[in-house]
Image 1 (cartoon, one colour):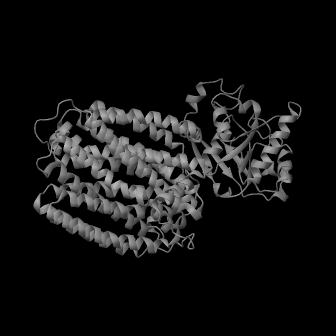
Image 2: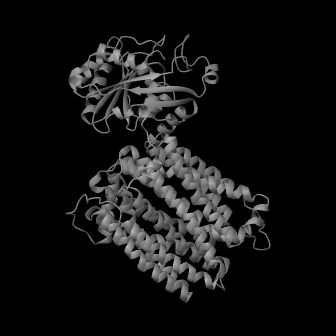
Image 3: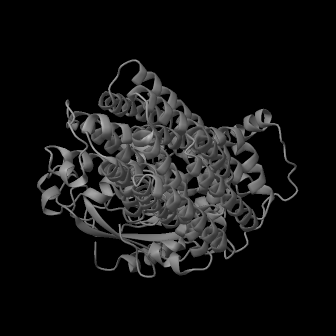
Length: 634
């Protein structure tokens, strides 16, 4: 979907002082985390003597669990702190703590003490637990709503560019042996200091609840924080979806070094390559999200991303060789092996679809959470993420200890993703509904929009459009950032597939007074209630789909609505849909399948005019405005 004139690329945010210093700070933090974590993993996997494969599996998954455990223990306190303290100041303090932690890491590498290094990893997890809530809650304070998806995509992309770079550098330096440990230490301290300096440029973001009293009891506050996530059902289900993604991703990433060594017969350089493929894929998926979603929170991408996670996880399991190479392969040797490119692509594409899956969920949580407790909701998200990742580590340890191979573990998790997706989408059918809408707009049409800023970002309003086809409501829903409750004829409301979409979107069925006066009155009552709740209501004032593409007379129902609830009306015009498969040109709609081919990927437009105040709404004048917007292009 293309925006109209005036839209700006997400990359423009990188030129703004309200975003760039924060972006650099979080990028350097992610880089440093992964230099240390991968140097530690490579050190344990390839350089610690007298460890069996089972010992390495247990140690690596234990380290992964210990890094995540602080998120479970300290996120509740971190969420309170992020809502109480001015956020730029808090970030500076967190980055200052990072310098001390990296000094400890250097001591651990110097002593070559695995237990000490894993303890430092735990402390680094505490620091990351405090950074998480402020990281995601500061974005809505510095970004406009229309920038939220792009800002999240850049943060995710920056993070997942930092991860492979840090992973590769950490792995490379750890592979050097004794001399590499000194270089790792120097790099960790240098980056930590640079991150603290960049954090000093982050603009102020005032504390939403400075009077908040901190509850230091981790048990009671954790339960209280989790209750914040329950307040909004869609937000809570989104958090469950995010947590599952972290279970999925953490399990795969933790196994990759030993998978490389025992299944692929690869060296440290191959392990680093595969570890880098995962975050690169997520970064690409995150960047594509903004383009595919039209700069709005498009949760329709979530089922699309979930499907990709399963397809490529399962294929990775089947692509894995049954017998590893006899010697430790370098990158060139590995890539020359049959099936190696397929393995690399599976990892990259699985991660890319992970970006489609996760970015809209994060943006949705930020968008639909109240500002005064946003950090605590994000802290609740981090608690659940941590719990799922700890369970992932325990699940992997249990499965591998029971004799399950790493490829079969990948297969099991890929198939388990199907069950989780069905469960979540059944609980929140809005995800699947938006996916159907998104697929329609991005597979059948090319949608261009203009002046969608005319739709209020908050509060009630009525959207009034011409009616050309059976999919008009879906196209307007796809173009609008906010949910819309459409008034539609009861016959269309009951149509197969479309019925699921309309019911899930809260559409309001209506009939003429002659057909069913009781249903008509019920519909007007529902419209009034929706507007009182601050919703957007969509209406096609013609009352029926056009047979010739021309505008019929606008019925007085629109005047009745705004008389009862004085709200602004946004006139809108659809262009280019007459003559499509879903229109009535030349007879009944959806009876001429060749039109799907002849009009495939045809351009359609949606144009909005500035809102008309309630006192100025007249059906005939509104019709003239829509007619002028549409012009001659039906």
